[in-house]
Length: 111
Image 1 (cartoon, rainbow, N blue to C red):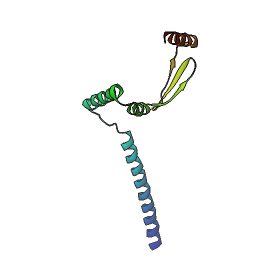
Image 2 (image 1 turned 180 degrees about the vertical axis):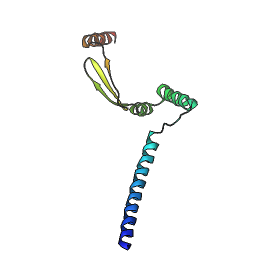
Image 3 (image 1 turned 135 degrees about the vertical axis):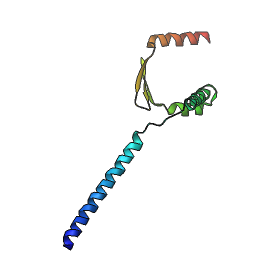
Image 4 (image 1 turned 180 degrees about the horizontal axis):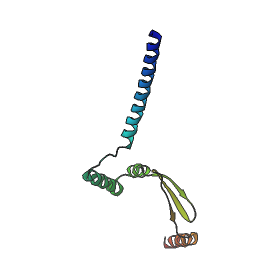
């Protein structure tokens, strides 16, 4: 009878450990999926600070701010491809190369 009780105890202990592991995983999942509530005043303050840095910040401060949002900029002859840090990608068309050369010639003449 003792062997039977030990086996049942081991099985119950194993089931309990499995249940606790699953519970910990579910709790972790819940924490990760919870939406953090942000007050409107906090968002307004962030935007004000953001604009202030862009307007009056040093070059290093501006670069650091932009790097938080932009992962990479690829420059091509006719467009820019901007890869944002949060996964989006945008293509911005540039003026044609001839238009840029004309503008450059105009600047050289004006000097």
